[in-house]
Amino acid sequence: MMNEATQKLCKVTELHESEGKRFIVNGEDIAVFKVGEKIHAIGNICPHQHAAAIYTGFIEDGHVYCPIHGWRFDLETGQKDSGNRGLKIYPVEIKNGHVWVTVENEEPHWKW
Image (cartoon, rainbow, N blue to C red; front, side, top):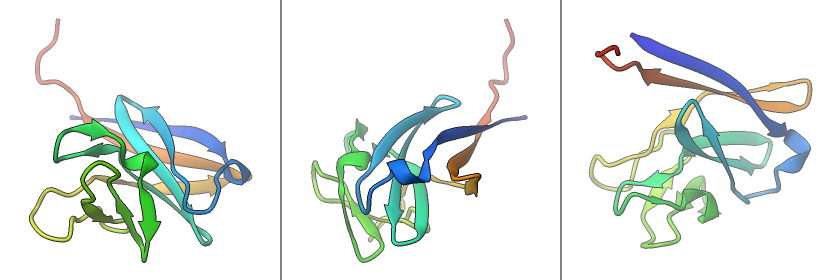
């Protein structure tokens, strides 16, 4: 069973070209970037050492580079250059000048 949350993050005007912002939505740590006219929402936890640092990475040619060890991830797909340890991509919508992101989490299989 999936648990879905859509949350308003910020105004589009609060995002600056190629500078990341960090948000927590439905328990997910998310990095948001504005690149040209497009807004990207991508997982903020680098799979290398589980550092919450992607939002501080730099952007080049449609990729974000982890500032800790330089791993490169595609902003459209979340894929790493090599291997299968990519980042999750989140759907983004712009409504009335605000950035909205939808996050789906799997609900736990147990209940209290």
